Image (cartoon, rainbow, N blue to C red):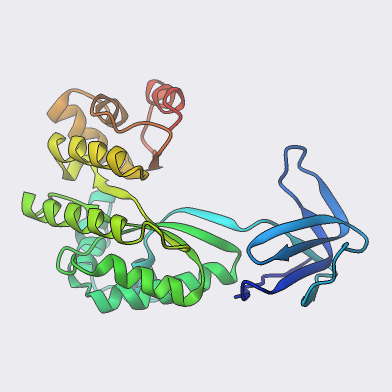
Length: 287
């Protein structure tokens, strides 16, 4: 079975029909239509079926031998990571997750510029769209390029024509001022893109082992006030779990639950080192 990936920027007065494909609807019955069609007018799917559409479209795509699916969602990503692809790292090989951060990602973070944020967004968005993702949720981490970074990412994404949810990843790994600036950048950006058709904002914390309780509680309150999602890396490595056990006597998810971070508008990324009770907390709060 061949693959058909279409990235189309249609004017609002244009229409499109994809025909002769294997249509995977992802509806409640998970219906699959052989040699079916999908018709779109402006930004709305107006008809799905088998045979001939009721209305003729301006643009016709023959999807014979191809699968047609709804756009995929990349629920957690770091667009700037594309800049490291193919890099030859002259470092001592990491042996655990903490060393991966210390030897690879944190040095990269600190070298990033606002121009890097734009370029990586442009490249990564184009690649995602080419491979079927139409929406991403990205957290940017650049302690030396905080102000203006999120708008740079949004600019690159808009130029590709993809949808994105963008956030600055707050951390206190250097100092509390770093987290404050990240918080302010995120809040300012969220307000700025409130009516943007492609871009929206969210609140993001790097991980519980790089922040204190105060910034987490402040983030929860502000996200609720602004009506936006929240996201945090959760027990991606043992360093996160051990930090919370040693400092608070709680596992990672237990601490986040105490601070009010869990809920239906929260994305907990990774959740590698979690136990059954933590999974119950995640499920029980619809996180």
